[in-house]
Length: 310
Length: 176
Image 1 (cartoon, rainbow over the protein chains, first blue to last red):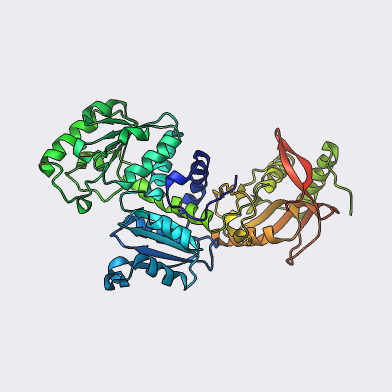
Image 2: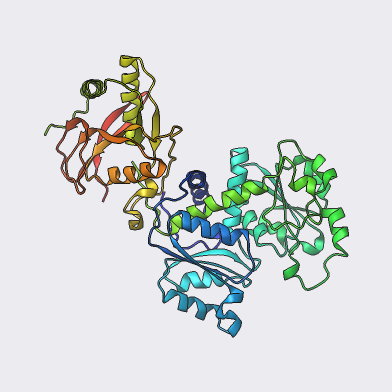
């Protein structure tokens, strides 16, 4: 099959077979990062600009390394260091960047819809690194890659996503992707952190964390997105942790072959305890490693990706 | 230039001749390894290595190269993305590497394969073995071991297709 997308704005735009293509291709890219010379000449001479208006460790580093390992030139800008602080709009900023002929713009910002608007406006490839609480497509793809690596297939997999669903782009992108790939998704959260109408996304909904643990193949923990929350949505971190934290008692309720995931950054002791994130079921660092491979796939596909078919 | 040898007997003959040429060229198989360029070169390499191992009583290392990321036409977006892995589980440093591909044409695949190999180590020597040399060179490469020189019109291409334990020769339309 061929890749018809200039951009990667959201999992909503991808078909199941396109998702499968990205996952399959990421296996090859993963191998490159384990070589001595971690570079292939594929995107030599291409320019990738990374514009991160929100804080990021993993995603930014991951996209940058992905571009560099494909031999592209990268330039990285943080919102705080850019003219955004002087009142320039994002669209103006992007137009100015475009005048310098980048081949790809990777953008993270707190406003949903900006990557889509830029994708429609700019001739370069636009990759969404997270827009508000809308989508974080590369995260969902790396999460699905990690699950597939561990379980062979996503079809019929029981995935529980636990935490601040309301404000989570990771939850949304994963829900879109996993349901397309035939997994069974359950979201677990206090009612104050569940968006209304969530049942319409094809997921099971519960506020009883213990009840999902024995049957989950994957338990994906999400951080409470305090930076996005203005109201008091639960009494205290401690109460949240007691009811919705993955602690040692809850880990013991999980099946032995089930895995624990977290997109990072973790707030240890709040949504996830040491026994969970440092234990043998955790694949959190695999997720990070896989992130580079998946982002290499996305850049490769968006910037040419024509490979030989014999 | 011959018509394309494509029957089972003709292919068998070519493989026997290639095996003989290789046996004549190497008095010792120490520090020699084969690397097949996926996908057609993989099919050929397995057959060649199998025959050599049987006739010479040696075990020969065989690696597989996927050159998708080294191609020079990536931005053209011409074909579907179908990438396999490079699998070479031995060191290529100081080895004589016999690169195996099904067809030598423009030479661009060989160029990509050489770049990829050089990123993996420093072979002592790289030689090229192909089943068919169809001419049409766009880069200055020649094969050290050739099954047959063939003449194909520009609108046709020849490929090896897996067939049970071995392969068959298939003539197809060239890609647009």
